[in-house]
Length: 306
Image 1 (cartoon, rainbow, N blue to C red):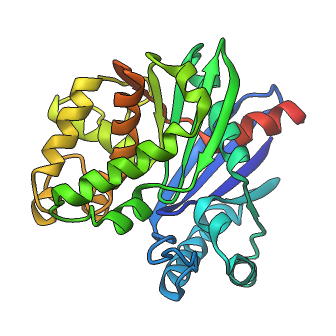
Image 2 (cartoon, rainbow, N blue to C red; image 1 turned 180 degrees about the vertical axis):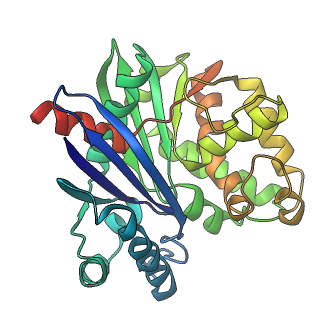
């Protein structure tokens, strides 16, 4: 048996997943840790990682070590996604991480991230035809799944954090800012020609903003085990109602909404806007949530290669 520790450095949070890999090709997750670090905060159009954000992230990475360093037959794989991928000073940051934690972070390309999302989600949900949407802090990954295969995929450089910062979606949102954000998203999504092939298909949702949407609705419906969102479904009307509910209240009030982590309240509107825009563009009637994504995709690939 081997132990595989995956350190996943996202734009808004850092996650550690420890899995036991068995000789028969199966695996079992034995621990999962999350720390909010918001690495992409303040990057701006210059795409420069800021010193405070880098320091927060490195502190979070160091805090993970006690959870895995004692394990036998250990493999540690570190991955970084959109914030590091886009950063002009990423070499400096990667060197700091290596010095402080001994982790060699692999910076995934946008296509790699989307492909691992596809591997992780499709293997667990067994979906045949859908549009997969992973909304992160600084990017969105889109995959058109046709007959169970990845027909087309793309990563686009906007997500919950940078949309919220660019269009002032953190507190009370003005009509002008909301309209500007919607126009921005529609123009960029319209350039993805193959999205027309995904019209009327359900959306399979991954990423922090989408998980938050699921938790809020499960809390509202008083469903037990709020965190157990895998396979959970919502209609488009339910998604739009939740978005409107969040839009109506200022940040201070939003922080008290059940199921919404207070530290995510300032970016939840920016995080939901790509989903809302796609639902309207594609005339989709429902969404399905997946707990499996990049990390599970990496495990599947590793097991198949082994």
